Length: 141
Image (cartoon, rainbow, N blue to C red; front, side, top):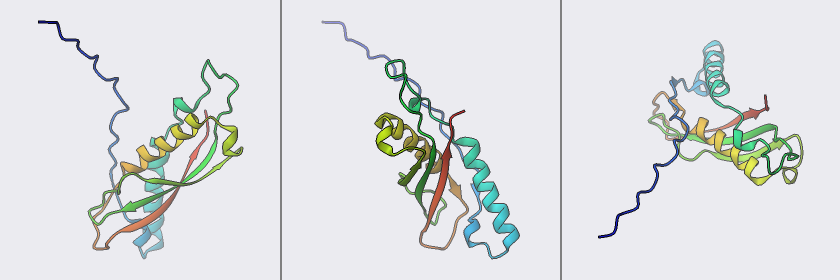
């Protein structure tokens, strides 16, 4: 019998992101509570979203432009508080036209936005489903 070849274990991916249960601030009639909920939401998103390494220039392409700017991402919040997968990037507002950047860099920004926004959890609701358009900014540090 021939020895069986073992495949190496897959490289570990980023740790699974766990979101606190966030308020559905857009339904809140009290302006102070709405503002507090919105702040909690954006504090979580900004703390978790990191500029992806895959969007940085590589040794093979050291002169590639670094994509910076904002993505607008559509999320659907289900009645149970989960986000319908995957969140959808609807628009990229970048410093240069998209054609100036490597496709892999743009894909890396999209994937990071989807990773963070896809992990969100909200309080349960009787509403059928809520739709949000979330801006997420990427600036290289």
